[in-house]
Image (tube, one colour):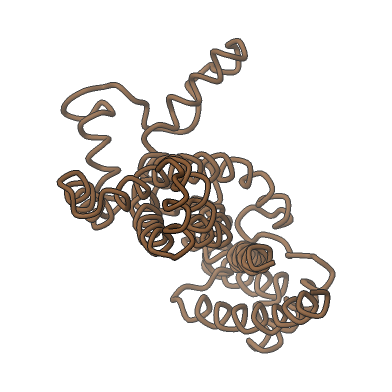
Length: 317
């Protein structure tokens, strides 16, 4: 086991290295000069001053060097766990990301908890009542949910339930109401929960559809095994057979999925967080892309890549 773990950890190093190279090249292919954008935002009155400021900004962030040198310097900082300084925020990338992680973590954990809580019973029922009317209806409904794009669902929820042209039930901006800091603990809790309803729904329904199908498929494979037939032949009740013997093995595939779903969700839903103006990692990436803030983009990509590979390793172990 120790040799296997060591081998997998060593394999993670070239994987992260390859992903960061591809990402570094792709983000530098995007049009726009971050130094020019930053300098003009601060100086852009006199053309001569602006050009001088652009050059100084390039030198400050090392953007005047060739791409391979820029990547080498970035890789050298990563070796000391230094993600650099944000071009947009003028602060260490670690500090900026650490401020946004708790917000995205709250959304991610809530979304995944609800997805697993609902998908497991649905998958079990569909597998034990295969081809029934309920199974057919649930399958159709889940495929419809999976096919709906999240930005369209979010827009429709805002229009119909968020004070658009119809009902005004749920807030659609941020995670707290104005003046929420003056409320009691439980009042703040319910205020935040009410703000989370729509974004969490938008982040949950697609995962719910996928997980329930995986659960159904895994359960169907397990209940056809010989040991399940033997358990039934011994006279055990159907509930004991399904929930004690079959459920344990059928959970293995979706537990493995959790290892990759959690880091990906933690990376932040750019669309959902932007639509609902939630200050998480998704919105941070969106702002960084618009500002061509390479340190922020590479920093978050590196963190999410490491968490994904580490999660897969833990699930395999």
